[in-house]
Length: 450
Picture (cartoon, rainbow, N blue to C red):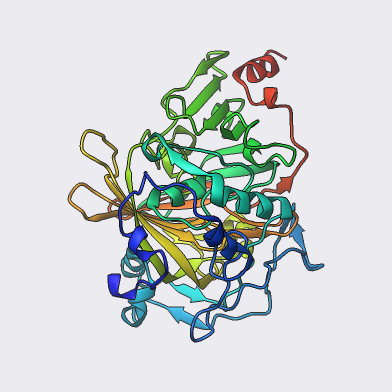
């Protein structure tokens, strides 16, 4: 696969491993964000044959078509697939398919396929995010051996990345609205093809790193605040979970859980890493939520390079479809999932000696235009492919941004599927930010008492 990696100016540094010692780039290199690179760091130019077009500003205005909440449901509705990849012809496309995608084509040859549509580079961001990203390029740096960052705020921290650690922080601090509200379902698919509802939830997110009136020297270090309550199934209704994520390596996550049966709020220190996700009936690990959710300190991160890959993209039609439209037996409905050819940063994560994780090796594929994580493969202790995740991104012009929430985790060895934070049949809205006191265990306890 290495021979297919694209040459790029930072290749020598990219191959240097985790690169925890790298700091901000020089001002002249940061100036490329106003010329050859997009404001978030992608290559502005298209590829040689034009199958990846020039970035022209992204999608900043929605058409007059239907929306589900703030998500347009019919992007490029008249387009048809330019290519369909199946188990029968996958060999000729293998250079642009991840190990996990190839494994799904082989495992479900009669039903799984990859419908490749024309590429649209819809990634965009508000102007204040562009301004902050430019400032971050010369001030943001890794600290604590890559386990934290400093000097960053309100934009992509490392728009010209030199290491795998910088890329994973770009994802953790990816562009988000100040505050959002949405419902979600966690769905579990069994090896026999049946599908059950693990939980249905009302969810709120807040992103202090992207407060418009904030600044690097005022930011607390918290970047994700989450609070959700479970409404179904009946025996779990009323449960709540609060999560606050921080860049601080000594306190990366704080979590509180409310259990109806106990009628109390308790700390939930196991909500993270490779603890089975009880919100999804244990069908995936907590750090597989949204592809990768939590602190990066369990791995060493290697930036392999940049590659043209077929990836889920502009999947608005999938995330806004009904549950029954979006899923078939064993996997997502291929006729609802949109794939496109994009350049991605390939990052490998390996558990170092002295640490542990149930998935000792992972390979990540990050969108060059938005740093959204699009696909993830996980390997067992023997180096065999074990699990693969697809994280379908969707464009929200109301921000504007390309965003991710749903992840579909396939356990290839067990033949099971876990769709986490599925938006199907739910709504997603950009909302005014809440007081941060809303995202506390005390607030959950007070609401439960009422």
